[in-house]
Image (cartoon, rainbow, N blue to C red; front, side, top):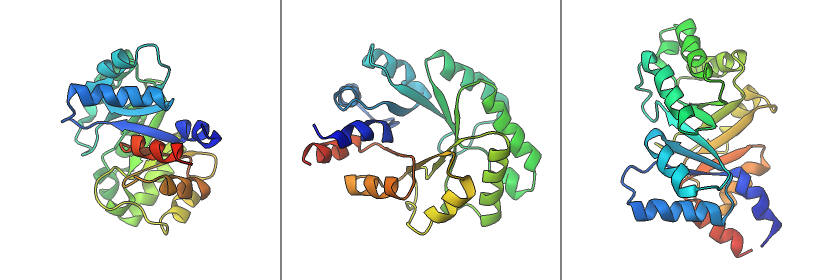
Length: 219
């Protein structure tokens, strides 16, 4: 098997969130994660237990998506759901904050929400869809996250148009090279993954991980 796959098994994060998956398809996804030695998985709170059980002793970092994709989680529920994710074996939290607070210039409220997520002690990744935000809100969101010690960012949420090549220089400049940048949305081909890694993106997230690794096997 090519050496490139050893690198990609950590760079490509499997996304398993489809609420319409059959149990058979869910188990197939778990088998593929083991087959390709994928080390990072993003999933919903409801799938955490099933993933742990289906993967058995297989070692992977499972990250729980919270307040995804609509940022519709009241702040008062954050602690309970983050603790639930931690108790179910999540190794990290991927979170969409309520960006309207920034639009309303309630910067302290926005910051307090993120601080609440961080209380678990788990690594936190903040999800940002650049195309849906005003430039000022986009900039403020990143600056506040950096001030709070956030080191993991996900750009794109799998909904709407994917990022374009013109977006990445600004993203990399604003976040800094020392932080982890994950890109999600429209990633279906190996060439897309390689192109993103070549420009400095840390990793990608996709539900099409099987198709991409099948391409790797043909190299």
